[in-house]
Length: 297
Image (cartoon, rainbow, N blue to C red; front, side, top):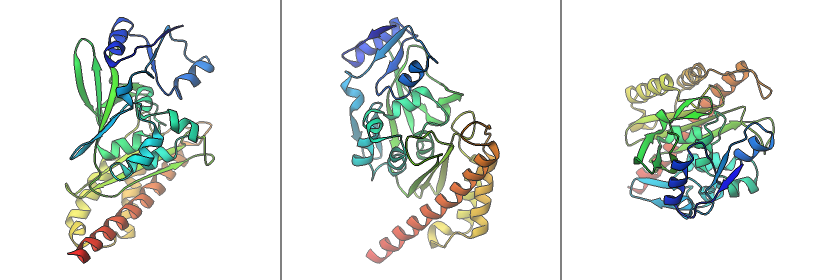
């Protein structure tokens, strides 16, 4: 196994173009596990730790551009206001040591349905910035990024440079079920984001289908119910029947398997429970913010 160590982004792209089978490694929290268990034996490892651009982030007027290797710890500490759902997801990643090393780019590159960042990125409506030496840079909508079990939309000569995530315009939540409280792969996970500016809701489901997915039918149902009931304007409490229907539709969006962490039926049930709870939490946050704004006016 050869070890490639580019010192810049341009050198990294050149190395990937020359060796398309090279496996990128930054935090190494996914790649090293596969190598240690002899599940993968790549001909080349492409070490990106010296590429400083990958550790930077920029907060724009509407969007955060998050470098692929920005550690989860920094997201938790520095971007909680702008990216609350992703910050909550970051809290659930493994241990402090791994949160100090791992970043969103690794989750995206591995594309495991159990990756902790995926539900939050789906709910927020992120875009993945990728580049190659030959074709330059392109943005891939997060909905089009996951193409199969541990497969993504990257071309062989492309690398992930950053993720573009819209700054939260409403409450966001994240929930995860695991077999213990730390150092655990998700049995299932759920992300929810309210977008009051567009009067829409987005979801993200992890570890309950071959890829991370959205519960689109649940989103459409809730969008219509909130609009027809005037909920965005009057701030009424969401009824139990509405929350239950939303939860049932989220469960129906799952296509899980039985494995050592949990059964398919349990995953469907747990996703429904998380959907109902996160909807309650986010809507109460929205109502509280709305009351505060009315009081200030």
